[in-house]
Structure formats: C-alpha cells, structure tokens
Figure 1 (cartoon, rainbow, N blue to C red):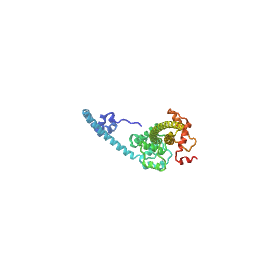
Figure 2: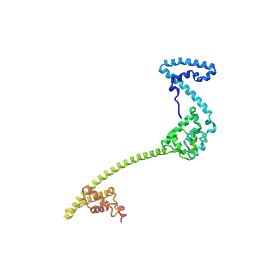
Figure 3: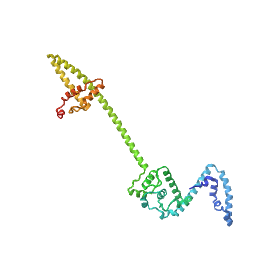
Figure 4: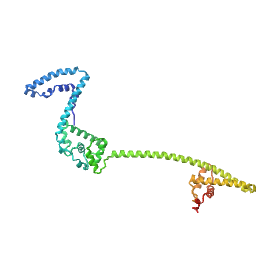
Length: 345
C-alpha cells in the first residue's frame, strides 16, 4: 500500500490557495463550466482573487505563514477523519455480521497472520480479510489500522518471535508482552480453556531470572563457606601448635621419669609423685585434643588417628613414630569416664 504526500508538504502555497478558494478545485473541469456560465464566473472570480492572495502569502513573515499552514492542515485532517469515519461506519466490515464469535475463535488450533489481525479488531477473520478491505485503503481508518497491525506481526515473524501460524496462547503471550492490543473477552476465553498464555521469550526471561537468583544465592553461600573454612583452618593450626608443644613437654617429662626410675634412691619418691601428676595432665590434654581436634573415637581398636597425628608431626618437623602415638592415645583413653570405653569391651 503506497501513500501520496499531501499537498501541504509538496506545495504549501497551492494548498493554502485551494483552502481559501475551494471553487478552484470544485469547478476546475472546463466542460462543467461550459454547461453553466454561473460556474464559469465563479471560477474566474476565484482565480482572480487567488492571485492577490498569493502575493499576500509571499509577503507574510515565516512565523505567520507556518501558523496559517498548521491551522489549515488541522482543518483538512479533521475533515478527512470525519469523512472517513462516516464512510467506515457504513461499510460492510462494521456491520453486525462481521463481528467475530470470540468464543469460537478461542478454540481454534492456530491463527494465521490475517486472522490474528482481524480478531484483534473484533472482526470475523472469514469475512474481514485483507483481500476484502484493500480497496478501501486510501479512505479508511479501519483499513489503515489493519495494515499497521499486519506490519507489526510480519516483522515479529521475521525476527523469529512468531511463526506464520501460532496457537492462541502463544500469540496472546507475544501480544501481552509487546502491548499488541487483543480484546479482553478473547484473552479470557482462551484462559478459561486452561491453556497457559506463555511463549518462549516469556519462559526464557522467567528462567533467566531464576538462574540469576540461584547464582547469587550460590555465590553468597560459597563466600560464607570459604569464611568458615578459613576459620576452621586457623583453629586447627592453633590446636596443632598446642599439641606439638604438649608433646615436646611430654617427651621431656618421659625422659625425666625414666631417669628417676633408673636412679632408684629413696630421695626420688617425691619427684616421681610430681611427675605422675604432670603425666596425667598431659595424657588428659592428649586425649582431649585427639577427640576434639582429630575426631578420635576411643572405642575403635585400630583408628586412623595415630597415623594422622604422626603425619601432621612430620609436616611440622617433629617426627614421631605412629606406634608411639598410638601407645599414648591408648594410655590417655584410660582417663576417660567409664561409659566412654565400656562400649568397646
């Protein structure tokens, strides 16, 4: 559908003259003027006055000329709209038989482009088609709107947003998302059938929002776990340092205890008593750190705690035999309350 530029754009002066002297258009036909001398006189008088009016227009300043042009243009547009609306109201597509049965069309498996356009205007797609209304294109607001909506759908198809044939729920989802007007009763009729009004773009946007939300939650959880891991590592390192220090003291006291036993004199008795108390304290600390720091289970006969402690000591540059570690763990567990070891018997 092609459109000719209006006269106010191509020849503003001629447009204003025609507006001022409509007889120049109405009686432009020479054959018509020959039939009636009165029309000829009217035409000649209008032509004479138009020359003077043309000179007046040429003498106008730019602002005044543009104001006059805008005023006359508005008059023409208003008159044209009123005329076309009057003509449209009398044309077949505004008759009652051209109205769409929206309930019927809500149950159709798919809509073509022209069907969707006709339904958007509340018209029966079997009666109101482009072929039946195209001839009115030059003087019809309805046909102009029909053509505009056709263009919107055609470009949506080219962009991959729609197909040549679309199910009612799919098309309505696109219409709602792009603000392409569809009659509310038609939308309600489709919804009543239990069909979800959604298209791939709507579902895609919903999925992207969900994924982004989950990603943010994951990042927050990851940061929190990382903080907890660092805190646990610091606590374990501090515990390991305490353990190493205690083991060093234990070794010194063990050597002193052996030396006292080998001395065998009576004067050593008080020293042995003092060392026994310290030894018991150290054993308590050992079993406590093994339980809390290494998750040691005293009820298991051959746990991996001794090996783990020996490995950490080696890393710290304080090697100690695994069996030696196990020996002291076994000694230390004897200091636990009875119900901690009874279950292992």
